[in-house]
Length: 197
Image (tube, rainbow, N blue to C red; front, side, top):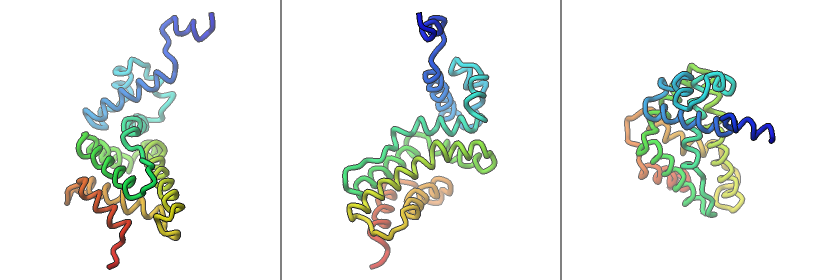
């Protein structure tokens, strides 16, 4: 009998399975009760794991919360690639708005961003697991669109990302005006058509 089979026979789960279970448990607490609910004690209990395992994989509960949020939202924020940047961008930005307005993740995302201002481990995990990968997907889509001649050759793609998603984050964090799918559609039109007459 192999060593792996012996370990499993004693009830030991594969590391990947344990990690997924921990991330699911952390996401459940995060989405139902907010970031303060994500503690190593509570997550370990909910996941049926040991606190030592969590300490081994994450430097803080905040870092775990950030990765859990990414794992929860990743499949909902895939960037389509139909060859039409306006359609793809509209679909992606509307999916982002739906996620944070209709699926209860807006307050969670705002909480993560707020805590990240004073928690360097959460800030690093948020960047590594959520904001940097999302930004890279958008830039890659814009690069393809530029290569197809759908965007100006000299456009700053990083600024384009800031204009679109930054505007959504602004309405999430400073709720002076509603964050809606109509707003997302208008953002795409403004960005792609420009403000000049």
